Image (cartoon, rainbow, N blue to C red; front, top):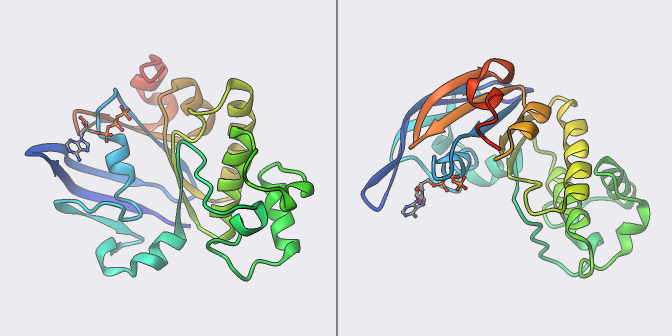
Length: 225
Ligand SMILES: Nc1ncnc2c1ncn2[C@@H]1O[C@H](COP(=O)(O)OP(=O)(O)OP(=O)(O)O)[C@@H](O)[C@H]1O
């Protein structure tokens, strides 16, 4: 299980401090939601955890080690990202599942498909023609194939229709119960209540509230909906 600590983290863009001295802990084995109004800095903060971006000052630590001291590719295998829209980079589900895990056996691939709620037949489907929800599940399976112990979830259901969104959310909830650490960006307070254990509330780049979801006013007030 993996724990992150943010210490006095700042990110600046175009002369503005868009993450402003954030100090916080992401507890291992739990799902932490990053919430706050549009433009608060949620996606910017999320991108620091697998070094898609680096802070301008301050430190992000994983199990006590500053991220910049770790091998970035090893870090990204350990910290997987699932984005808002399914971005499939190969022609077939079979290849897609092996993008980061070329040695994956067929049995392992079928097991992964099962974990994300897809029938075995999908293994031999072309990626073209998958629905949004199916594509998002394939992306999730591709990320899981690498064996991460942290999942970064950037609005993972926001581009899906309500039925597919609910189904993908159920799948994610099942996975999160299994000991993974997760960091979720979501605009939906209802989703945060269903999926997350803890929440960090950002406003104009500052951390303004944090703690277990049930006690976070921004979430209970429906501020993220
Ligand atoms: N490269 C950049 N140059 C200038 N400003 C930037 C850059 N990247 C982000 N910003 C600004 O930083 C702020 C935080 O952006 P970010 O995308 O992290 O917010 P967010 O909370 O994820 O927003 P949303 O909920 O709308 O997705 C915004 O005001 C954004 O315009």
